[in-house]
Length: 98
Image (tube, rainbow, N blue to C red; front, top):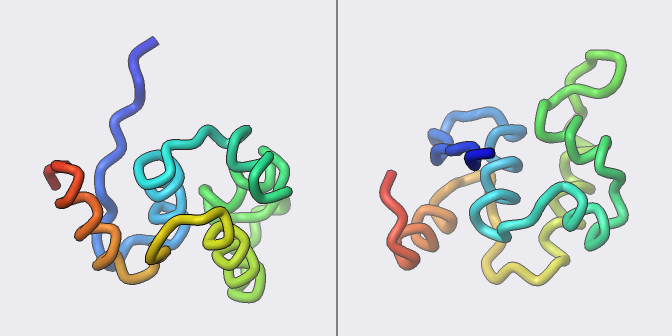
């Protein structure tokens, strides 16, 4: 199976898209690996990356804040996916094209 190509989200992209991009490119983890590092279930990570809970409601800011803090704690230097600027600098340093 060929890997899915994921493109750098725009600055205005939904947080869910930025979270998924961060997981797949910045830390290069599967949902299972991120689950083991963060304590979030694989299904919870999937829901965050969709932006909706299991009832179809948008994930609230409080839950996003907690998820961001937990992800930041896995040791990624200069963690951010909200502004995109640090991720773009990191991408440039690694030779990724937009």
